[in-house]
Image (cartoon, rainbow, N blue to C red):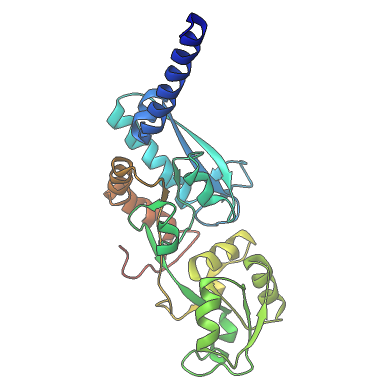
Length: 276
């Protein structure tokens, strides 16, 4: 073996070993080394993650939960930890975590078996489900115990709600919309009598549009379906999952959730039944 070839071989071996070492590094180990928590936030997941129009900063219950993870990291590591937010969308939120671009994403993602094949989830931090949003003046016209025949209802195609609720009420006058923003706007204009989607996200859209949520009603009070939201985490990192689970299950998070969704005082009054 020539001397030059030997140097090249050793160089490649060193690079390979460094690559394998990086791959083996856990999230907690990397954060301890770099002092940075990489998180993802969405602009369209009110009240979990959105931009505060007054300050231009990320806010929302999910954002504050990720900041709580940051503070717990500082306590455990005994050093400052910065949190860096990368914008996520409904299309890339799982790929961001799967590809290692972010460590954590608490943005109203439902835990499903299909998604668990690519990413991991924390224990649930919120429970919601399909509900009908209507104006208080229309409550008597939305009898969910009957067929809702000919009642105009807005829905978002290709969602969990779409795959279940339209089969329960096949006689309703179903009107497809592109998103919750369009749906709530149609409800405001009287073009539909109700909108069906995850109740908490409908409530968030009302507040986002400057509406008083107490002028509307979510039916039924117990959602028809069950959607458990979890923080999206990388697969095969049990140490990181255990850490995030501890934060999600903490009294501090329980107090945080109460601040965001208190029925009497919060901007997003929502009754959370059977909260995990």
